[in-house]
Image 1 (cartoon, rainbow, N blue to C red):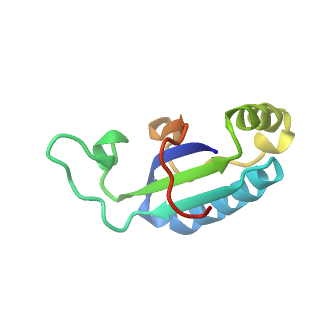
Image 2 (spheres, one colour; image 1 turned 135 degrees about the vertical axis):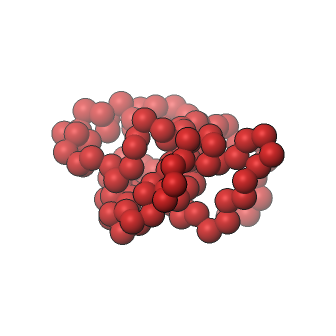
Image 3 (cartoon, one colour; image 1 turned 90 degrees about the vertical axis):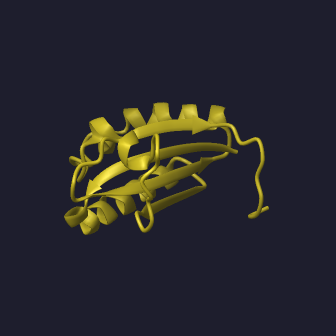
Length: 118
């Protein structure tokens, strides 16, 4: 298992546009072997004393935080799929995302402990 995670600031009024963008992206990633994608819209994002999700992405007034992750079979599979996806012309025709992509945080991780889902 290999996990790619994102934290994204999205203008609150773009919820439905984000949902459509994410649904299209999920279908595309599934074609390339992504096992699972979860897109989560801010419900409770507390302000931290030193840092927090909002500060991490320089969220502005009126923006909500999206916490998203993708599950891939393993790192090598993900890297091969990513290379193929970047060759797919649909990758460039997906349209502009409904958020400022310069402020999103992306990280990929090797799990060290898992619980649930087998």
